[in-house]
Length: 258
Image (cartoon, rainbow, N blue to C red; front, side, top):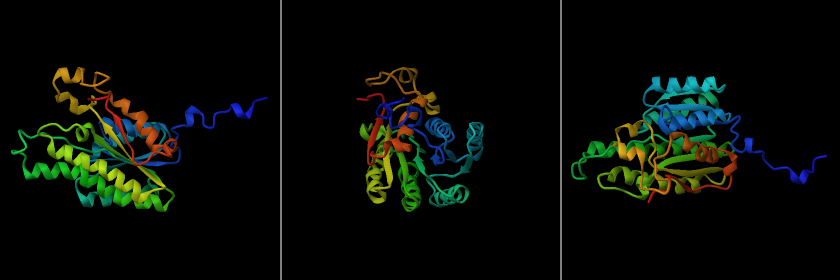
């Protein structure tokens, strides 16, 4: 006879269960976004995959369907205000809800110097990294609160915490995104949780342009860049009910950069 007192309240296999949930991931066609899409689908969620190129979204959607989940690929530019209204509408029209929103899309171009940064580049960086997440959370956060709650994950960068020369617009936009996490955690709480993943250097497609030394080592406790799949456990924790008492938080996933 099993002693009820020895039973775990939640089996480890159920900790990150997303069965019956719908997740929307921007920048979901590659890199960290693709890893999160696949992880959410494996955990039982249906997924809306958004990025600029619908063909890339379709390819990841096919992977999700192979995992037995529904997938909706949507071409949307997160820096375009109207695109985000359309993205939110098509997600709700198709699935009737969004339980998890991940603002993952971003861009980090570097100019020769701050003085040589064009207005066009500045506006583009701020639009993708700050304006877009603000708009999308504004569109979805209230709906989440009205229908029982949800989880919003803003993917920021160590560049906001440890800014470097010539990355002013990017570092500033990501720092603003960190502030948005607090704003929206208070605005849509208590049923909607809003958190930040502060990502360090990861070996995604963008790393192919890095010098070989930067691909091998980093100035961090871990001493190396992250593998894309190493974002998954933090994303699953924040997306799932296991993080029910975690909101307004910034979680560094950067190998201990210093």
